[in-house]
Image (cartoon, rainbow, N blue to C red; front, side):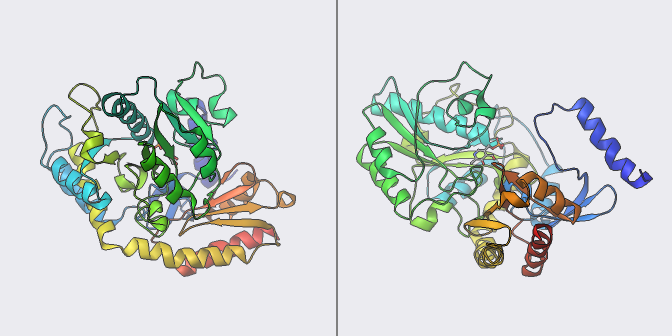
Length: 401
Ligand SMILES: Cc1ncc(COP(=O)(O)O)c(C=O)c1O
């Protein structure tokens, strides 16, 4: 073992000893990062094609976001919601405007936004719709986070097994099947919760008529349409929200990940006053939710999104990425799915598992993550260039041949 590798090995061993084994990371130890590149403790550079599951959409240490964070660090970082801050109102106004809604409920992690969206839907069901025993319809193979309630309606046995008792009140129907959804709606249904494009399931894009039909069914039956855009939103697919591809405006947006600019955890439930107005003091909260540091960063993220440059990059470079990956079909690649700079690549199992391929890619300086055994997920920071995409796809071609 060289002294250089010893640094990596020692740091990984320290994690293994003292960090709960709830992840299985690639053996790369980041020391710094800029744009689309991560430099490890050995000084080796890796092209990040995961972007922290889309939390780093605008690039590692995006200069505009880092400047906003620095400025806010020198002013005030946390007061809790016991007091006001000069950052929360402007952030909420900007984010609500971006979503075309009235109000924002600021939280921290994505799972918290989902939990909060579920609570809001249930409270709306009780107070507005007059339903006491409410049901929320979810999609099969969903991924919305890791809390006890959220895993209660997951189909992923590993995520679920051993963590019961589970939270009742959810009904699951196949993703992409609007007829099944229509049949599942009854008088107790208060909401439909879904990812417009399923991320963890392998970047599953629904049929074109699906989301418009979900929207119409929700309107017809007085049911809230809740779009979890935590991974699909904020420019990843080439639009501000994935729902925009189908001209659909949900009643509730759940946002997270990139909203915090890759700097802080920042998530939000965004909806009109007739929905979020059901919350009153004491009914919900979070000490860190909407803190001044996160709000300053979030407002900068909204400013960036208002300019549209990253949506355009995701559209143009996404077409390039999808074309380059599709060209590998039949040469180790079975299928490519996706929208914008978000691609699910099914690998022919004869060439190895997704995990094995991602390990071989990491050795060559390309970081991607496998999902569901044989799928690789490409979701690079949206600052990536066409040349860098070509380089990453060439490395994939190399490990497949
Ligand atoms: C669609 C979706 N919702 C919710 C979450 C949970 O977010 P977090 O890990 O920040 O709790 C994720 C995370 O991958 C996600 O992809």
